[in-house]
Image (cartoon, rainbow, N blue to C red):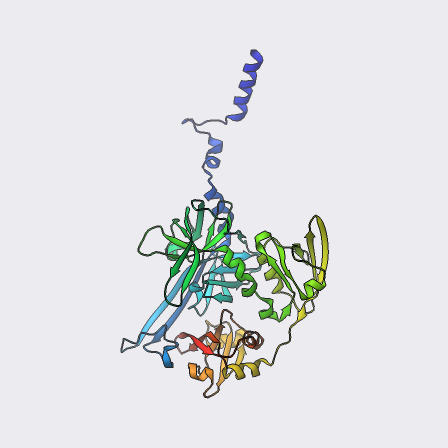
Length: 448
């Protein structure tokens, strides 16, 4: 009896911490209040950014035929109208090298954009790709130190009712966290005849203007969606793009074929970690097979598909890629030598297909034209009667986007144009630099 009492006394002494005057455990107060929402916010706050972009527009009617470029003009007014578009949105880092994901609508009207971290650090950001159809954009910042990145999860196993956490910059209140549940799945939002988003996640987590482009996370801190829209006529009805759509678009948005004209021949299946979905060309010749699990490239761990595609953007035709893979329980090594895809005469192809002649601006040349400019392709000549002439292009305009890409040189333009069929309509965004402001114009050009 005595021994049993002594053991109970020892257990009480071990388990129960010291109490304050109110009987509360002073050493455990914070730990008792630490919820999954707290954990997720602290884990990811350093990877969430504020995105700010400003554009001033002044005019009163479109100068283009057929209304192709009249998005920013009010033809009902008889006097010039100045409009200042300040796009305040959110984004998040997906790779330590400084790659940022946000919504396309956050940046698509901007001449330039700035990325601001929780500690106030700011960076100018370059566009890598903008996909308006899926409302996704990828930006790149140049940081001297590795950036904290989110972990990409999956959205094909989401449950209605499970807890989700949103981090963003609503109404310019930076790094605000809200939580709620998944209210529904596979929602469709229709904005116009041309704009419709499908497969969206609906949530009751509070989302406001400025949250666009921010992460929607599960209780494990994994990215499951990108917040994109709200119902303005309702409360607590917000929508997010499933992260699976981002996974599916990464190979094209970060395509080494479009950026470097190189072929590796290896595509990953993100559904099963980082397994090989396709091995052809150089990858197949190196002995890699479908189903192999990619462990590392050139000594760099590959933890998610973005790691692989972003690494490829930094290689050259002279590099050999030493890969470590797993095949069942066996580890194998392979060396992949990228092959070069021939580049056509870019200037000639551009003239043939569009009627445009351009020059690639260096950063210094762009800054001399206007301090806000960072790069682009300046039009030096427009062939009379060509598709470009018919669409309203003018010498001096600066091309900043073709399709989903932001080309900085003629070779990138050639890659985009050479595979397009005759009669294909391609969206262009161009800048008209005036003395006191820059006009951002957009419209379609039909290639010949």
